[in-house]
Image (tube, rainbow, N blue to C red):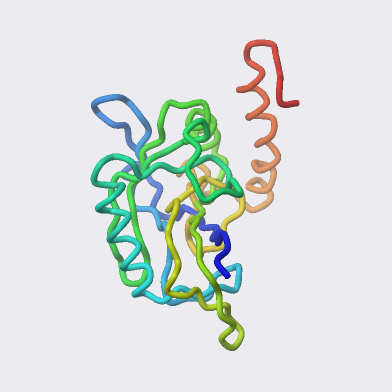
Length: 207
């Protein structure tokens, strides 16, 4: 039976140095380069395993049908849905490529309400994860759940708080040298930052 498959990834902090955080020269949007979007041939944090040929097929389709026409949209947080909700879109994938069994990419953060929250979190040294979303069935194979050939990719990298794919974190380079206790305290600021943004007009409709 097909089900919604969500894989949480972490944007690689080791790559997010000055050369990887830049601005789009035409519109000033934040560009994040050289991040891990997904990984094939490895058991992920959800106990699932994707064969490389499945990802190759879906990535080729994603590039030709979405990236090529500027429609590779992704959302802030993971909806329980098999469609992209435009009002929640925060960023767009501009380029993808393979590095071994890792799918790498460049993403552009958009000046939407959700994109502005994502940008503010990054600029305030908050680590953000990335998460793939797709539909498909699973088959138990030893200690892993193997994703079957009916898998269909919906979103390559929604922005989330907790990833499962190794290495898919977005992280401001200024936070790289801080110790673990300081890093943990940074996570506690997330709700405060989001509240400040949403309540800037003196009204907090979601609280």
